[in-house]
Image (cartoon, rainbow, N blue to C red; front, side, top):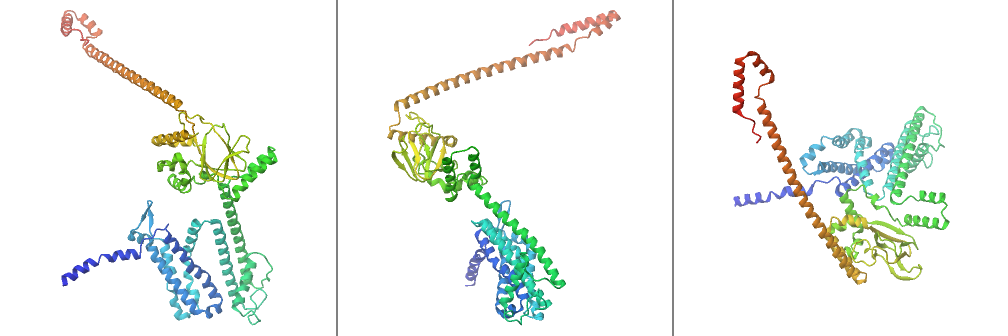
Length: 575
């Protein structure tokens, strides 16, 4: 039984670490859980940032709600402690890869300034309550050291929210409120130090009716601080040195605050204008151009109405420029999620490869047409096809009034003109007049873009041409004889090209042989020259022959012997 119990304990012990991992997983700093935890930490940080100063400067507030303050204080301390635990379980990126090793995470965290600030913000300064009493909230000022967590939460929210400019304005107003709140608390504390009602500048004597209430004390102080920091004026003149110093400090703070507010608001307005310019075309330049060129009023009105339609209905015509900073793959995914369903409705693109459709989606260009504007006219050269995203277009006669058909959302036209189909009786010319009945949003795909994409998908090109041929057969627009003649001409051309390729290969072979023979001859000549040079080194020089003649017989014998040796050696072999 003891052995079985040991086996059971050993078998049941491994799941414990997995439970611990489930309870305390490693958080991704860019994930949702970490983001929501940051938003949770906003509340305890803001509580300490606003309430502690207020309790320290308004004693009645501290005495009246002591139990509530103690509960909120230690609840915020608990959240601070949990935040340190979360920090120990928040991964970081190392060479672009999320580190989930808790040992590395912990060692990295404890070496940062954030860890020291987090520890300092949780120092048990409340122990001094035993000596100083519970009504000394200034002992908790070290909780302000967790303010960087508040800034981090605001930064994450600004990047995630759909209205970043509105959030920036809200954040700015919050900062202004905190500054005025702190200043009002300091004003009331200074008034209490100097004596209530001692002069017109300080807070009135609480003995006066109405000024003893806590709400009146805070609102009066907040109003007074607002007057000073907004430089509105209409405040009593200071009478003491402390009051003068307080006013001077507030004026300097007001100047800095005014500059900050103006800079922030200017940045917000600039960002909004930049966003509008990126999303919508600048109509001011076009309007100025039309005025300088004296464009007639009717056409100018149509252009202004077109711009107004884009602005009111949030229509975009430059999606490529908006998404240009995204990585290519991510840009393709965004475009696919927005436009793939529209492109897949086109008959010639159905059953095509998914990668081909993704490439084509990136080539779609949104266009907006005004009421009565022609998209194309009969006889025009077809360089693009159109897919109707929204609106209605009419197929009209040459008079522009008679309507043969009405095209709605999801339909398309002009697809045959961008595919070179043999035997197409209409060629690449438009066969109908297409006019917009109202404001119509279309997607345009040019022939050049389609050709560029199909160059990498030859099989898809064959499939699309076959589908286009079937469509032309149904429309009686395909000349089979002309198609056969074009196919025969193409085959003959290909046969001639193959013949030319064969002749070119033969010429290259003959040229290679000639080069080989030339190299062989050059090597043989170089070898013979080198052998002749080696043999001529043994021949006597003319100076040696002259010395031999001066010496007489021995010289002659020597020369004869030399001649005999050279004769025995014989002439150099040319081979």
